[in-house]
Amino acid sequence: MKYAICNETFGDWPLAKALAFAHQAGYRGWEIAPFMLTDNIYEYSQHDRSAYRHEVEKAGFEITGLHWLLAKTTDCYLTSPDPAIRRTTTEYLKALAKLCHDLGGKIMVLGSPQQRNVPEGQSMESAMECAAEVIGGAVQTLEQCSVQIAIEPLGREEGNFLNHAADARQLQAMINSPQVQLHLDVKAMSDEPTPITQIIHDNADAMIHFHANDPNRRGPGMGEIDFVPIFQALKDIGYDDWVSVEVFDYSPGIEALVTESMRNMLEAAQGVNG
Image (cartoon, rainbow, N blue to C red; front, top):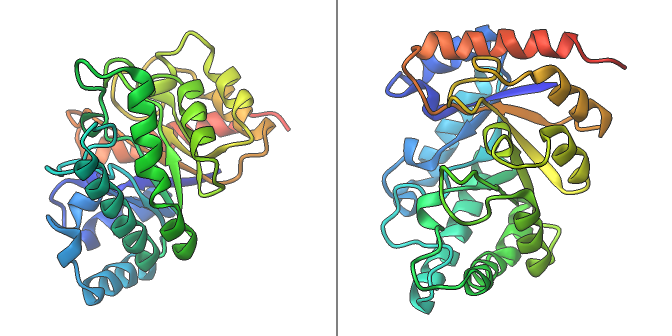
């Protein structure tokens, strides 16, 4: 397994402190929420991008890419019926692809439920068509930047759009580009009627990124989910890319979340056969 962690986990810690602590805990991948870098990615300079990338890589990490792509934006919306908003959102995804490339990342996880939920009165068919148009419009830039979007299904607690892996696969098929693939998240999959291990096996051909967490919103192994079968499924399908820790409940404290998540994943990995 290759283990990564999301940078927002560390809150307002200085970057050097966060990197040192994460590296000591055993992580080697660094996943970035753009809002942790800047309030305006269009004003985030080439110098700033190079300096950030250099500091992360100097600390012994690989930047995996971006997530929370549309979070904290005010003019972007994936499923909007307004053509102007859809165009703005496409342009923002293009800008994010360039940011991801400049930072050395390869994958952009598209979750951001508050910027994709289906508005009241809009049909699901229309929402899917709007989302396909927005993402499809960024494909050429994704190709140029050697970056892929990984569509993230999210549970019903988060919103009403793409609640199942099958929904994300449908959207992926509508776009029909190798630059658009699938992301799977343990917390989200726990909300599906299909067992998590089956979802992993069923989507082995499209999954390019993976988030480890628990339905209790804490890190892997910090709740009721057994990660041994999950890691066994990842092993069985030949997944050898990043398993990235993403948490939402920070009450245990940063140190505990970072160290316990890694310890639990290592213990689960030891239980894998083959």
